[in-house]
Image: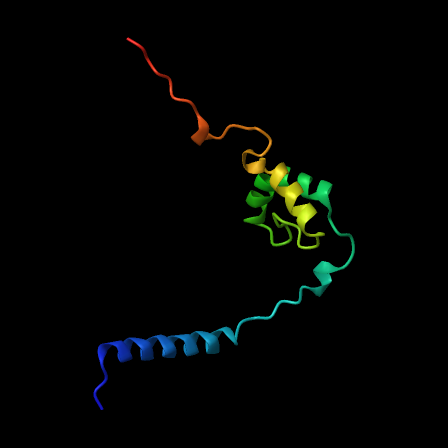
Length: 107
């Protein structure tokens, strides 16, 4: 049986997908239930975490118990606080580098 080039590609993609699924089944399972108990961070917690995010990022490179974003949060309010605290992506009227006006020289 001779396969056409398109059938070979499709067969290779299917075999690769099956291989990936089989290998991901061997991945380590992390229990996150313990992380989700206790205090839930809200808007002000997200704001604070956004402010200290660059520091947390550097520290998290060497320590496993420090993360940039709190897993145990209340959702959208925490995320809004985090974004505003981390610079707000220009929401608070800040001017980013891309918004810099070019000087025009008149002759």
